[in-house]
Image (cartoon, rainbow, N blue to C red):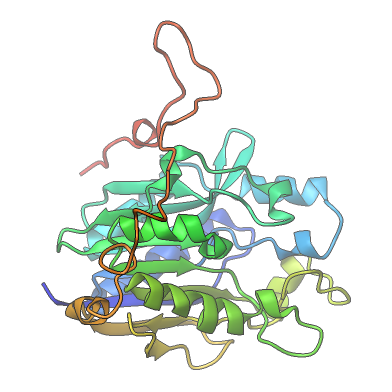
Length: 336
């Protein structure tokens, strides 16, 4: 099919509350289904919210412990509740969350189909800056960044500054991405004292929009927002912004971009909670790539090429063939 309806979420997280965060995620999925959407995308770590206090304060062991306990575990009842919501709404969802595996957290991203099946789960390959204190690295299995939906749409996603890794982007394009979920947290717009490199103007209208043009894809820029009450819960320091564009209120910049860089839909302001929806024509990708297809006719692999190491590297290997469970092995089939 050529025409599909896609939906980018701009919403406030249920800060540090796993159960409420799962319920809100399910409600948004239900709403997207009722509005006829094929795909819905969420912000980075929508559950239980992005911990921007790590940019403004010294590490707080007890606060991080609370964050760990409200992070989501693959295959848990809470996780399966989101899967059932996708099945009930008959939509594809790309859900961002803080994933807890034992005592380690990851910036997780699950691609869940309309039957509740998890077609792809990946983790941010390299946490950015002080995120490395909280989150671990994704491994080789997270190099898979795309799946094909039941309607034949190649759906992909990356987290935040993964969009600033040019080799990863090129590998992503090579997987044939057509609709891309750019998952970002809430971020300040440009202004006095705001680092330009991480402000919403750059993250949205420069980085996300560039991916749309460079990769020839529809890009759903999915962002969170935060309230003054949320800032208190998340322990943000109003006197110090840190090296990132930390918003104490607002911070949303959700939009949908076409492959030619045109704005197809945008949130009404940085404070609103809304589903940003667009009906897109996938043939526009072919129209755009007639001019420049960076993995096709507009490449020179005889001169410039990329090597990708896809072999998994388990932390422990046993001579009898045992291994750590894969993502798929952690995800039991849903009950009827």
